[in-house]
Structures are given as C-alpha cells and as structure tokens.
Length: 187
Image (cartoon, rainbow, N blue to C red; front, side, top):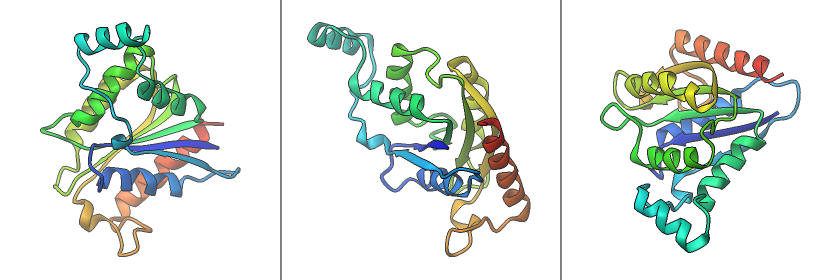
C-alpha cells in the first residue's frame, strides 16, 4: 500500500509531522507499506496571489507552479493520504494554506478522491480541534474521501517515552480503529 503522510505545518520540528508519521507507521496492511512524506518547507512557493499567478504564467507560460504539481503528483501516486494539521489561530497554517491555494488552481479536486485520514495535534488541551473541524467541512469539496478525523491533545504528554503508543487508551483505540478503517477503505 502506498501511503502519503504529511504534517500541514511550516515548522521544521512539527509535532504534526511527527503525528502523521506515527499514524503511517501504525497503519495495518496485508501488503508492505511504501511511505512517502513531505515537509512543507521543501516547497518554496511564493505567496499565492493573482499577481504571482499571472507573473508565473508570463514567465513560464503555465499557471501551474512546479512545487504544487509535485505535491499533487504525490497524492496521485498514493493509495491513502494521512494529513495532520497544525492549528494557527484556529485555522490552517499559512504554509499549508499557500500550498493548498497553489495546488487547487491546478486541480480543484486536489485530493483526487483518495481515502484520507485527518489528524491534528498541539501542545494544548484541544489538540487542534478547530482546524480539524474546518478541514472536515471543506476538504471533501476538494476531493478528500475522509475516512475519519482525530485530534490528539497535549502532544508532549500524549505518547509513551519511545513514541510507540498513545498513553490514553481511548485515544489509542480511536487511532487504531481509524487506521484499520483507512486500510480497509483503500482495498
């Protein structure tokens, strides 16, 4: 199974990148997992504006920024997608929103109807619930076949010392159930 997992964050030390990789590595599969990851900082995109889009089109003859196309290619190659969202003032991070805007100009259904697990975490008690609610409502319009969503509160206290399991049994059970659903959905 081909899995594309990423933290929708601009941080080089993203707890959401860590959560996305944790989930991908716990995904049950009858076949070997081929994992592709993304660090948003690897995508040097100018701030999306109509002027930037027009400048790119004049310069290259194409509105499609190559980094946004690369992101879409990673989704296309995947069987399933796992996204863990950083929450900035109750919304998407600026880095993800910018990548999202450039990518959706190329392909409005940018998630290409892939089975998608939505996650969020933060050091706080809500664990990114606000951004997760936004993603659950909006991403189906952009082709995300959402299998489920889960917020993990208090990231730095949520895992055992080896980052191999969630300490909270209820959250652990929910995560395992969602990962099983994602694996089943991809068949």
